[in-house]
Image 1 (cartoon, helix red, strand yellow):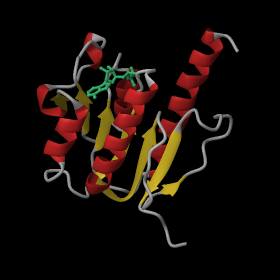
Image 2: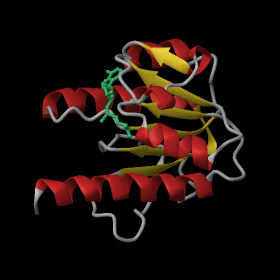
Image 3: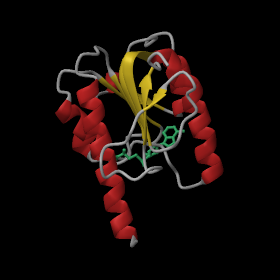
Image 4: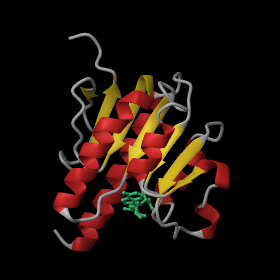
Length: 166
Ligand SMILES: C[S@@+](CC[C@H](N)C(=O)[O-])C[C@H]1O[C@@H](n2cnc3c(N)ncnc32)[C@H](O)[C@@H]1O
């Protein structure tokens, strides 16, 4: 597969997973966490899809399109690990949707980031909340959700918080 095709599939997977998650949280109140602003594409998609939700964005180096930069109250600048640790109490049990797109292409670094997110997100998630990630997370208390049709296994990961009864 060409790199162009692979890039397009990644973006389609992101969009399809975000759309499914947004529908799933329709009745779950609470803010959205966007971990990794990047260009601001997925942030822009989320704010269009969820105009009445607060979206808090975590990013260490803001270089997004100027139209896609949240206001200061919704931008948690700095290392996401430190920001998530600082946010634990304020957002405990309230987050309806967390989207993590922090992949660097460096497997050891990405594994470390995935472990950190896996440790930090459970405390802030609302019951019925959804977690989407570009990296596989270790969330034993969450239910692994099927991916939307057409999204290849391993390209994106979706979890429901917490696991429904076995
Ligand atoms: C792949 S980009 C996100 C792309 C974004 N979803 C979009 O649609 O434009 C990943 C972003 O995560 C940020 N990032 C990666 N690791 C981070 C960390 N530990 N703390 C804060 N930001 C981080 C990078 O600076 C980068 O902007």
